[in-house]
Image 1 (tube, rainbow, N blue to C red):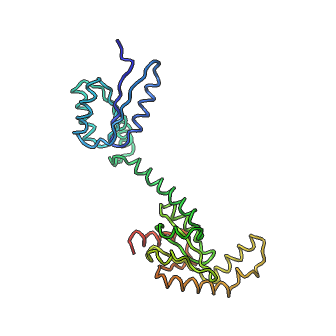
Image 2: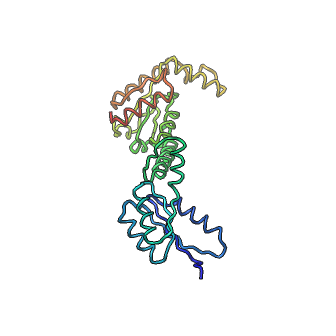
Image 3: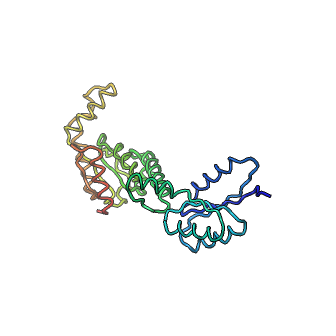
Length: 270
């Protein structure tokens, strides 16, 4: 009598989601089959495989595996043949085909997809952080940020925050305005993670004038006045000096260039 409830052992050096998905897709091709799928995750050595094989023998299970390390693939295939179990290697045929066609060697790094997933979620978290703590909306973020940007208006604090966030760095930014005292959190943060952004008065005047024009306002507004700009820059530089942070002149730098300087300093711990 045929077994209408097969047992499938899904074995992986990571979570095993890929092998389980393929197994369920195969089972779905049959009417009247209600397979029991057992997922065994993070298999790292031969001893663990021995334990799985022993358990699988009790119910004459089918083994479906995604193992990156060649020695483990060879071992599980050998054990399965010795015990008369069916073992299906999902991953290595495609890896071997890619290696043959490209002439490249595979990395053979277990769990690499989930490591990439971790990077993705870290980036998402950093972007959400940058939005929440943009433009001094909540200065408490300064204490939890990887990078803190300070500077007067229109020194590219927000674009730079978002660029760094897409690199996985939690970034807060605080505007410097002479009439407003900087938040106390700014002086509690480690100076090495604070970066002051400055521009030449002429460049800032041009940027602000264009901004006013885009808003339908006249160029005579105090916002674009050169004397006012110089006053703001002097005030910001005083705060930067008091903090002891790195000051970056972004006058002739693209956002990517400034970000590169910041990332190098942060990663080096300078």
